[in-house]
Image (cartoon, rainbow, N blue to C red):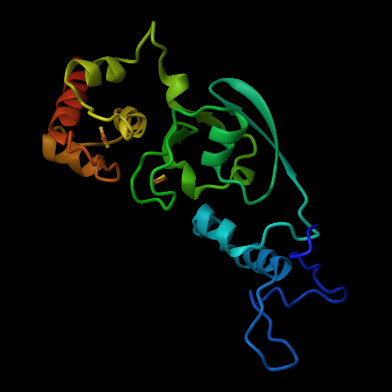
Length: 219
Ligand code: FES
Ligand code: FES
């Protein structure tokens, strides 16, 4: 602990019913890490909070920072993650496993660059805490295809120039791969609606839709 970090006072923890507690001096409400975690644990709010918001709300370096252990499968490889409870699935994949194909765009669930599959369903990994994935099977773009054996969507994105800078591309392809298994209509408008959570700042949308259409028509 450095000199700028303060230990929480001993004694009774704050009420789990409220995320904040007021000091006896009538000052501004104080949010401690312990009271916050007790509140989210008791209210079920954990799953509704963006991981980045949770991480930003809790001071780092508190005395009760205890890693959690999570067992999960990533791209068919069993992993045992020992991480800070606030670690997002995105950061775990990128920082711990070095699977950097999954991109961090907004880190707030707004761009889709971080899309991965969890048990076959697409998820914005920046909004999900790795601690919530005990026993889950995660697939990232590295698990979808390889340079020697491209997934049909990867090949179609190349064939149709469905990218420019490429930053959004892994998220686009992971969403598109999930879309293939979802009850999506057959029109381009249906595809655009289903892909609307994936932003492409380069504006490659028409080519992305063409690539998806090719794979759907072939299937
Ligand atoms: S980085 Fe996750 S949605 Fe933008
Ligand atoms: S290809 Fe550049 S953001 Fe989509």
